[in-house]
Length: 444
Ligand code: UDX
Image (cartoon, protein in one colour):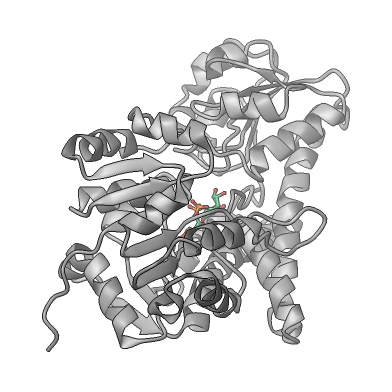
């Protein structure tokens, strides 16, 4: 048996959503951590104890980590190279403009900037979601550029954290995946996650391409599950069947399971939509496009839910949208988040606006982000005042405060009691009893 390695010093390159969370959680777990970013504004805010995005529980942990003296931030890659034994790459891989491929420019530039200064043995660990084959390419890049040459190794450790549950998912993950090219790299990673492994977390040790694939395979599966139940909603709509009862019945089968089987407006966010597109693109490059051709359909079903939600509004207003006053409850791509990337709610709001409706959006956390991106929409401060005078109300992001709205209280302020429940979050019996016309995708 090898003796337990001493705790490595850790750097986290890229302090966006993934990186900031990882840096803070690693410091809380007891490691000395240096967070690195090219954006001095982000570094200033984090150093001052401010988390630059909405994530429950994270601000408290940032304060705790800073107070412990184990967490610092910098913009200097040379300082990072000097400090760290294990360097986690956590920069973004957004969808490339005008293509389905992933944009790897941040990964390449951050790895290269770090590698230039690596003068002693170190492990560079990719966490970003990348097309399979990237790790092999980066290994070559790092060993060519680093003064320490082949003493610098590369590993892949995909990250599965969900927004809204990022702290829990980081401190108590379902599993750890270590994609490694040597026993040394595996031992370094085991040392970097010792407290998590001691909790009994399963560790899957594999090669680099498999580790890269795990992340996109997991997100593709989740996207497929959501689109599957939404495809069933389309069939329900044509037959008068009820997709919520159908989903409940399917979910009781242990082999299927109820999670990610919630029908409605479908998936959005910074991961699922771009990951399935990048995966399709990469598979085509590799000559196995047919194997994941179904992901195009998964994407198509998901987009149709947005269009169909707009149709439900038209059905309620007799086809006319010009001048119709609409209130949309929700802007974020899901509750407990201020993230509006590919948010289904805002897509629906903008389509209604373009069709001539007067749209007021309300969201507990994402209003500022939404206003910056779509200044043409109007924004309210709370659900009841935003719904005052509305001809149609839509629930598009299932925040708890929207689920708990009293249909009588809201009924008293709207012009017409008409609601589209885009997330199957309300009780139709209760809303209909309060005099509302209630419509939801896939329900009679
Ligand atoms: C996802 C993965 O879950 C996570 O493991 C990965 O690391 C990053 O991508 P996230 O984007 O935070 O996480 O959101 P998630 O909770 O997965 O929800 C994705 C979307 O699916 C949301 O828009 C949500 O509203 C929608 N969704 C989810 C459904 O429409 N139905 C469901 O049953 C579940």
